[in-house]
Amino acid sequence: MQRIRAGESAAERDLVERFSRGIRAILQTVARERAVSEDLCQETILILLERVRSGGVHDPAHLPAFVASLARNLATRHYQRARRVVGDSTLRLARLEDERPDAVSELLRAEQRALVRRIVEELPVERDRDLLRRYYLSQESKERIQADHGLTSLQFNRVLHRARKRFQELWEARQSDSSKHP
Image (cartoon, rainbow, N blue to C red; front, top):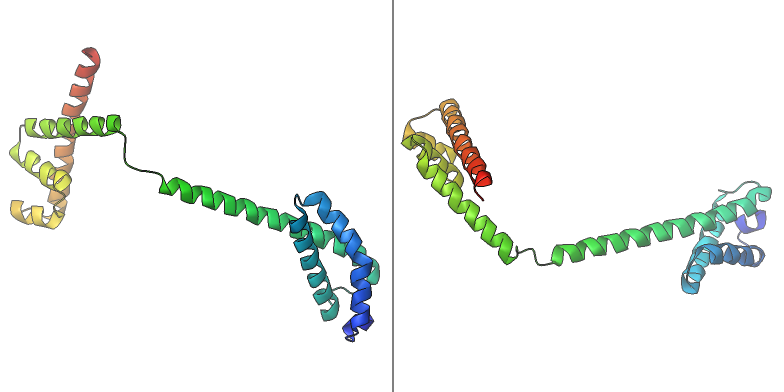
């Protein structure tokens, strides 16, 4: 280790020769592919040499345990990254799937939209109908609707809340009627 820190390339070759077979043996039990095993072996040797050169490994007696641990950790990290990449690509593929609803879903949504519009029109108070139509169906701004009705923000919230409550009552009545008469 002192010779490596002193810059002797022969000492580095000796270290590589001494640990290469053990590193390969560890990685072949963990790595599924020979090419991956070889890449991880090279990476392990590079990190080992860097640590020895920098003085990161102090006691030569701990070197075999350090090398074995380093090889296993690199293999584990490699497969964790590979799993994440596969997961990410699966997510990307899922996002590329056609997100348009099928014909049945589209038909159900159209029926619900029509029912919502009918119920809004059945509301007894014109202001309720106007607020719900403009705010939810036409998505007009709250400020514009407030101005047209001469309401403050607080008043608008209260009126809208009551209109939604009345709508909800009619909606639930329709749902219970339709469940009784399929």
